[in-house]
Length: 165
Image (cartoon, rainbow, N blue to C red; front, side, top):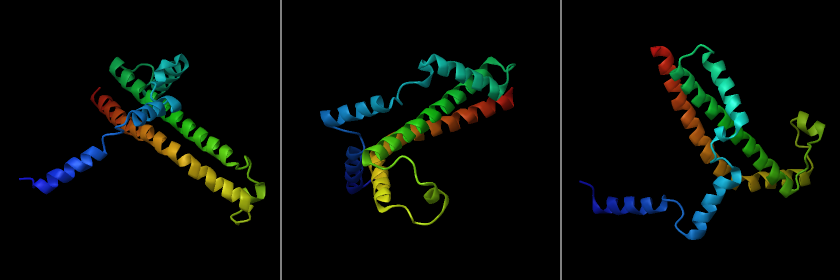
């Protein structure tokens, strides 16, 4: 039997992990999905549909069964989703770097050697840029984790279908 102390601890922890409670917090959470555009299904875009279909045919071949092609299409959609997430992450980092004042190009000598000869103002701006990008990267990571999980399950289903057909 579960003790009263453990029940109360579970209830306290449960209250902490149910997302934002205030109207302002809920608006902010809704805005995250819109800001990054990652909550919109990738196949809404016609070009992405064609690319996903080409990728699905490349995965299973042109002569595959309908079930196999449908599952390969799911895998292709998730791959395109991951590409979009990675582009969004790069954009978030680049934006934070620009806002922090980090120069766009690293001097060639600094990028090819392991010395610490970078100018102090550059390293400070670089670290400020990465620190500034962290909140956005944390929000983007949620979408990435979900996509990797979906891809793993989709690949397992595809493998099962290939073995059984």
